[in-house]
Image (cartoon, rainbow, N blue to C red; front, side, top):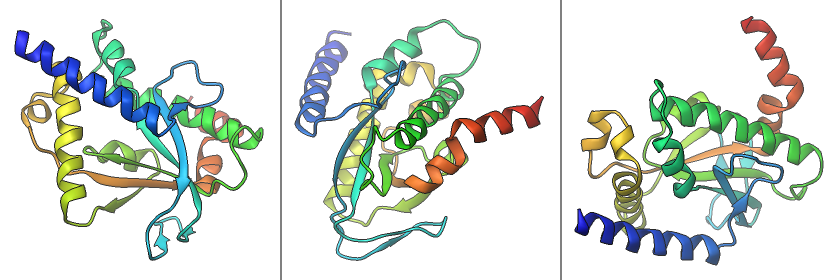
Length: 199
């Protein structure tokens, strides 16, 4: 138990310093504070072709997603009959709706062409409309897999499915969604229409 608390303290410190370094902040207008965003140019040497048809050129300004592990821990500890994965998926939909509104209201710079993040569990991302792009083999992929799996194990694996919780090293992938696709899927008008259809 002492070892786990000590390791958790180290991971929290590293995580907090990294988010401060990249200037990751909650989505404008978010009440949940689950998704954090920072911005930087797309640094690849070749264009990226998303499944939706959008092309991201080198140097294009993108928003990079980071999950707030502190918030996930708080959510995991809340009493609920639903699994943590299900609750997070619903909350991420809310966060993306807030982000779409922020894009339409000019709270996100017009130059931002797309949003991306790195995940070890991508099934939920596909349901949310993201394109999944495998990371190239190498140090970066290996380290990201270890780090993301470590975060999951330390923070909230006790509230996830047993098979996932037992997986120490999970493979990371990049997930992408263009600004236009985000707005198309998650603008308030679209969400209201989808909700009406499900009634």
